[in-house]
Amino acid sequence: MQALLDAARAAQAQAYAPYSRYRVGAALATPDGRVFAGCNVENAAYPSGTCAEAGAIAAMVAAGGREISDIVVVGDGPELVTPCGNCRQRIREFATAATRVHAAGTAGVARSFTMDELLPASFGPAHLQVG
Ligand code: THU
Image (cartoon, rainbow, N blue to C red; front, side):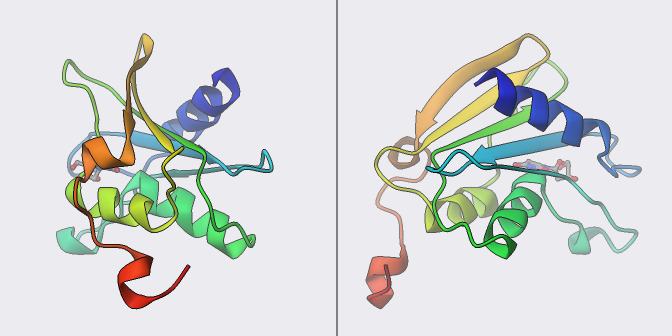
């Protein structure tokens, strides 16, 4: 968990967030122990910005990974950063019943969730007979 948190923080430090000034880092682990990280990348055309989780998932998929064991999301400020709705669905695509989503702040991981807690009754690959 410490390695994931460190990777998420390192990615957070690289966040490109000149508009919101809200820097987010995410790091995920695959079942074989590989770690992939991402940060939010904002855009002058605001809706074109991407979340930290999206970057981490893209890196995993590009490396051939297809399953998330754990994902840590780290942000600053008094409110705990939990994945946005879009990112819950993005994580869901590669989640299992064992996947844990960890929300972290400056003091470290503050809360951990199952996918079902974050996105109950979710739509997933099985609906399309995939996976
Ligand atoms: N953000 C993330 O990167 N992940 C989330 O799950 C929540 C929001 C980013 C998007 C935007 O760059 C900034 O935080 C403020 O919404």
